[in-house]
Length: 440
Image (cartoon, rainbow, N blue to C red):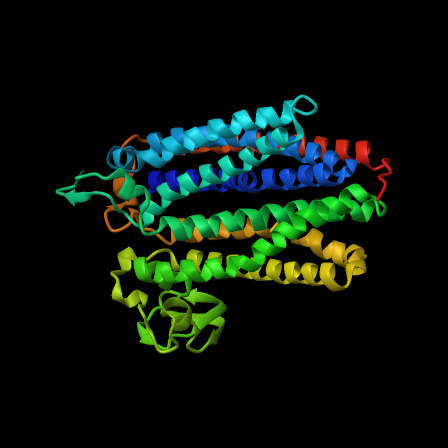
């Protein structure tokens, strides 16, 4: 059990670290593309400077993400050889396509970074757009592989072996679209609010900076629209999970008993032993509606499954509540921004609103981490849902705490390097652009 815990913690830390770069790689290039588009259309130098500044941040996160992604690929083979032996031939195709998208992204990013004043403006802008599109494609391919673990397809499982393998059916399994949609929108929410929050805080420090004002407005506009769309994709995902993984949905809501007209629990602390939720607020019938589209629909409870196949209820429930809570807060702030932009533009740069946007900066990534926890922890004890348990996929190599220490140390080192590089970048932003007076 100690080795299993070490392996699972190692994967949790690795995925939790890497997912930040995946989100930024999917969304951030579109911010710099929007800024360059505005420069081409308006001729305002502030937008060109924004695109250049943001592209340097993209490059930093791309390089760090490449390292963390490489470490993850080693960990899969090192820790879960039985899983890779069976799963590799089935869902290898999306990983190969992800590698292709990664190389396209690298080439396009090189053209964008070094093509200023060398390429035609529209060609240069297109290279930035390709960075974003290939980043989204890369993320979707990886999500297709993860979705396969939640909804295995494209093979027949006979006597512990996969036969009649169909890689296309495996890639486009029943879960891939809902996961890809939800995660892609989440990437734009998290990145948009993080970038907007950073520039809002810098705008508090440099009140007359047109650079930070325009940066915040571009990032917040994208984050706000995505935040308002996210509940729709969340509803679609919840209905999908209710059909495919009813035990996961029951753990998300700490729903122990099968019943019709099931209530939605807001907050609360699950008491698994007594099969109840303490300190929560229950909205009657709402879980039935959200899961199956009817207030009277029956929702499967955890009691229908053997206890040894229950996901960790406490972790899954709390992570789900954190994800939804952060998402609702960002949707509210996003709605406020869109209303202000439409009706009361002067409120956008008020100190209280800038502080509010600044506070929102980390919430998107907190929601992403919590959502990923729901996806992965909520699938337990299965590594391939209904087919292979996580403990059965573990390597027989002893002493897994030592790789855990090694890889955790590497991720800590990468974190320190990243913080240092970004601190330098932010400092350079202040030194370079705070004294610049742009014509509005």
